Image (cartoon, rainbow, N blue to C red; front, top):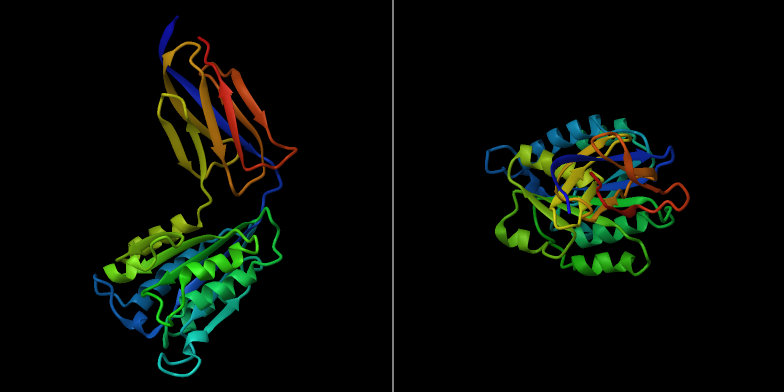
Length: 288
């Protein structure tokens, strides 16, 4: 059996013109503790406003629908109704940049932290959306639930209705105890600085495309694969060794995945124009 070293295999993704819609609901903590400081000395609310303003200003508009819910903004923490103080102030209907920015800049912290109630209300906002749409809730909080709600029960409420939502939780300077309260609840990141918050927010809103090789040769590339983008895989191994590539692209209706060798020859191809699946496995055997 011949052996060859250093051959470069290219994986190319071609996207179709129709892409699935993405619906994101931001939930912003506006409890009174947002006036506390992060370890670097910046007020949590100031850091949140700065990062969210930059984030919203740069949002793309194609196939994106982003809304904003806040809790704790109208009722004092000890007042009646504090645990139902949660409002969707910007609907998930396209990207209303002015409304999003205005809400972030002018709505002030005041009350309690009714996270479970807010998650239940947010889940209801996703009812009736297309099944193929990507659905995301991004919860930004500086504390744990303060109203006795159960976060897992809140999630199970709409999961039982067949609504699949990707929950991302971003903590703002959470204590170790508060951080533990989110164990097993979505994907969690704790940010101690404005820069860490910005990174966490970008990660939470990125629909990752992953091309991986499940053969004995480790290979994985993650990130946004644009149409026609090439992922380079330096293959080292025996001729005729089967390789299996897997593509996961949850936010696009791709049309073709190609594997091309260093001579430009297409050695394997998978088409997906007909069924709209978000993942595919593509097997091929390299030839010298």
